Image 1 (tube, rainbow, N blue to C red):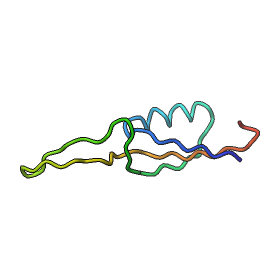
Image 2: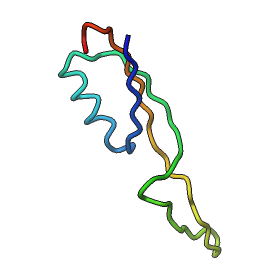
Image 3: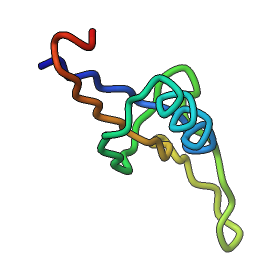
Length: 70
């Protein structure tokens, strides 16, 4: 069995699920996670104060398939 883990942006989830489904991959686990990479976070204002938001919401996909599928 092979396990693939992917971290994607939340707005891409439906597109990725549709593509996986078209490849006959119908079982996956989806988790909400936080992290940063190239995006490096952002600055937000809340009640007149600026805050650095260093962790950005992401979606983690775990996809397991049998060896013969790969």
